[in-house]
Structures are given as structure tokens and as C-alpha cells.
Image 1: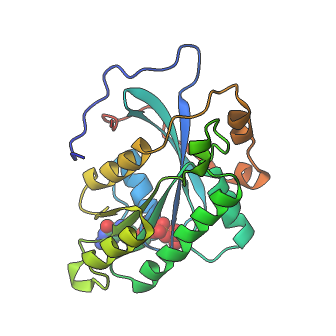
Image 2: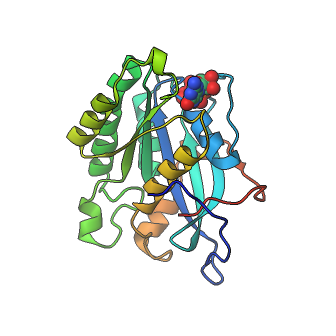
Length: 239
Ligand SMILES: Nc1nc2c(ncn2[C@@H]2O[C@H](COP(=O)(O)OP(=O)(O)OP(=O)(O)O)[C@@H](O)[C@H]2O)c(=O)[nH]1
């Protein structure tokens, strides 16, 4: 996909309905750049300092395929956490960004475990991403879209994981892959997020059983603070 993005001029909204929501969960070890990527996508700014994340859900509107979509991006804490909690967050998501840093082999080694966990949790809960039982048997059989993101490619001198290793891992797992630098500019980040969004199948009818189940948010997810992005200050990303 081209890294050229333009201002959304006349995005469609469903008459009388709020824009559809699409939930992205960012996973990966501490300090791989999850917060930096989310903030880069939403504000186009780069945060250079490291402040271990308190979990947050960022809300941000984008235009995907001509439709307005309300993104909810869960920036998880990279620290070790309770297995049940991580499963709850995975169940919540429609699609996943699994990050590692090319300067940190441990973070690369963690990718396979996280991807298996996503696939296992969704298979166990009926498949079809956060839209379990989305009406079509095919959707139930489909694993949710997951993208492996290798970050910090600008730090070539400190590189511990080659591009080829990243590509080979993604090929083995049958997942899409991007190597990016969140620091170097906003376009690679936006291209990765929007490519992932574009792979999420349409949501079920809002009045359907699957859609209502999806709307039932667990107590754990309710506790995570939500940050609205507010009115756009700069041209919005569009796929
Ligand atoms: N050089 C370089 N530094 C980056 C890049 N992306 C993020 N960083 C830096 O890496 C550090 C960690 O980034 P965070 O976004 O806080 O990492 P995180 O994955 O959210 O970490 P946790 O909150 O602990 O899970 C920060 O100092 C960022 O500025 C990048 O592409 N290049």
C-alpha cells in the first residue's frame, strides 16, 4: 500500500448510527514502542522519553474504505501480567499489532508466544475476532487479523534481529509483517495501522446477537481509561 495519505473529504457515516468501532490491541514486551506507535498514529508526534505504560485505550476516528470508523486502540503494558487478564484483552480485540524491537532479541522471541496466544484465545472463544459467531461460518473459522511489527529500524547500529528473521517468522506464522521506525516519521506507522484495519471483515449487523455480545464489555476492560483524540488537529488518515 502506498504511504501517501490524504485528508478524508466526505467520509460516509451510517445515517442515524454512530460510526462503527474497530478494536486494535497492541501487544509486545516492554519498551518496544507500543505507546510511541499509538501516539504517533493519533497525533503524528513522536514521544522520545520512556514511561512504562499504564494501560490506555485511545479513541480515534479514521476513514476506512470511505466509511468513518471509530478506532479503539488498547495500548497494553509490556510488563509481565496475569494470564487471565491478557486473555480478556485478547478476547476484546478485533485485530492485533504484535511489536518487537529490532534492537532487542528477547522481544522478538516473545512474538511467537503472543501470536499463538491470540490464535488460541480466539479459537477457544469461537473465532472471528471480537465478533464471535459473526453470522457466517467462514468468519468463525477465520483467525483475527494480526500484524507483526518490527520497530526501531532506525537504530541500525544496535540491531540484533535482521529483516530476514522477522520476515521468516511472519511467514511461518502466516501473518503480515512490517519493519518500521516510529521515530523516523508518521507514514510507516499509519500505513501499518490502516493496512491492519483494512483486513478486518465487516462488523455484524448492530442488532444481531454477535454484535450485542461484542458490546458486552468485561469489568476489566471497563476499568481501563479511555482517551478520546478530540477534534482532528491535522488531516486524518484515510485508507
Ligand atoms: N530510536 C527509536 N526509539 C523508539 C522508537 N519507537 C519507540 N522508541 C523509544 O523506545 C522507548 C520505549 O517506547 P514506548 O512506546 O514507551 O514502549 P512501550 O512498548 O509502550 O513500553 P511499555 O509501556 O513498557 O510496554 C521510548 O523511549 C521511545 O521513545 C523508534 O522507532 N526508534
